[in-house]
Amino acid sequence: MEFSHVPVLFRETIESLCVRPDGVYADCTAGGGGHSAAIEEKLATGRLIAIDRDPDAIETLTARFSDKPDVTVVHDNFLNIGAIRALYAPEGFDGVLADLGVSSHQLDTPERGFSFHTDGALDMRMSQSGKSAYDVVNTYDEGTLRRILYEYGEEKCAGSIARRIVSERQKKPIETTLELAEIVKSGIPAKMRREGGHPARRAFQAIRIEVNDELKILDEAVFSMFDALKVGGILSVITFHSLEDRTVKNAFKTLSTGCTCPPYFPVCTCGKTPAGKLLNRGVAPGEKELEQNPRSRSARLRTIQKLKDRV
Ligand SMILES: C[S@@+](CC[C@H](N)C(=O)[O-])C[C@H]1O[C@@H](n2cnc3c(N)ncnc32)[C@H](O)[C@@H]1O
Image 1 (tube, rainbow, N blue to C red):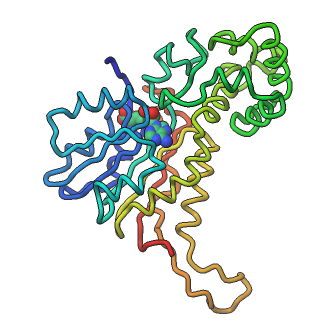
Image 2 (cartoon, rainbow, N blue to C red):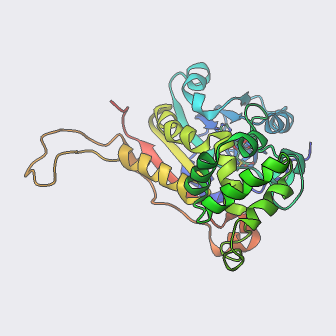
């Protein structure tokens, strides 16, 4: 299977993990295996667990690492990182990586239904199971559609787009990505269509997040990934939009905050110390990467090191 994906913030991410030759690592979003291959190259006696929820990615990863006995490919949701740790890294991981969002393979394969540029059945399921974009668009009530478009797409025209979707699907079900893109466009006033790239970009992001439950999973998974580290281990997360980045930033803030005494206390009485130490405050792609890979423009890399277990 052709699986093309240019990993973003590549050098910065691999450097952030400070890979030890004898370490045990988890790539939670292994995709086409770009980041995974770079981690594996640095291992001597160590191991890499390459995880993805997409069966296409698993097929690609299995073929790519078939001659690498130090790589184990695991088809799972990274929300289950605790169980994966128990099985493959009982002492905890030396490093965990999550490169969130969709792969170029998912975006560029029309049948996967992620793209508003090419026509395909409305799907958008990373795991290729469960509810699809077709179900969301054709069965959710107008209020829920409006909320999703607003919350997950930060779409200013959420109300009129939701209204258009409901009125169009009364004539016939909305079946393809280009049909949906046209309906979204018709719900946005002409003068606003030119703001922020393709007019359907925000709505497609919102529906994709809903289909794959991305933000709810991330909210819990960041803490589970941190818990899966051994003390001294490093967690690096690459986000692709402000909602994801806020989730990771807030989680890292909680993990790196020690004392919770009110600021007017002259001395600390709670005795709490941070569980983690921030190793950066959000790395953005440099100009060269932006030029070569415009899809990297909204990417941010955040890294935290575990100092102790959370209590
Ligand atoms: C941006 S791509 C990763 C690309 C990868 N770093 C590479 O170098 O090819 C994101 C991948 O994460 C996977 N993914 C997203 N959410 C996931 C989850 N909750 N559990 C497991 N995999 C997930 C997607 O299926 C996709 O393959």
